[in-house]
Length: 330
Image (cartoon, rainbow, N blue to C red):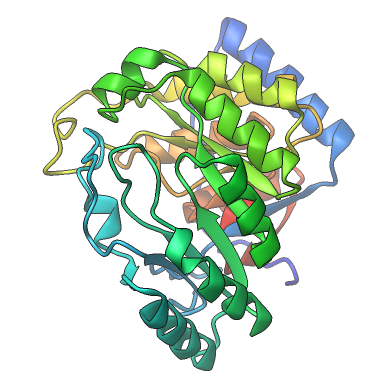
């Protein structure tokens, strides 16, 4: 899509306190991004959320998320408690998944993100759905799958089904896995799954949730270093957003400068990786400041940007486009 001009009156004066060491990291990350990539930044606005600004308005049927467990999740992690499933389309058996895919395709959908709640082992129960996923792919829709923990055989089956991409959260701290996810697993379990997905030949976009340990940075840098070691082509960063009705609802939000710092370090560690900043990040008065500095940190894509952030990207010399699909698959 052609680039669109910014609206008159957009203010770019966002004088955030970003000095010293962080400024230096940002400068190095920006230079590396501009050296290794084109000047384009992509703004992802899939159908899970209405996006309507003077610059672009999305279609909410274009690329939707489907939960194969409905609103049910056995883990009920402290940061979510299943609330992220509430906005997804429900398809709890293969026939329902096929029916939803047909319905969405008739409405002009480009593809689906297939996800769901996890079982007690941290897995999204996808086994019974793999033949249906292969049929959906054969019908011409893109399919992204959020797996949770997987085995090598499941990775092979997902590859055979033709999925376009697999998403998996990578957690670098055992206490976070135990206390937040309520799982008796280790970071090595997540690294093993990422390795097996990559070895199966899948396009994998690992995710890191910044501030997952009750708003604190604990294992994120360890996870980032392991992801960098594996040489992934895509990386998605998100920041913890305190959801009502969860044990983290009233916590202090993760410090925006720490989010920016980790994003810039990701660019330095992964100089040729396509880095997206996804849907989840804190709202409120600091959101605009956060987005501005994420652009400075060298990201390639951002989901659901503030209109002022688009203007800032243009002011930094970037061209931009809006795409109605998940930021991981751009």
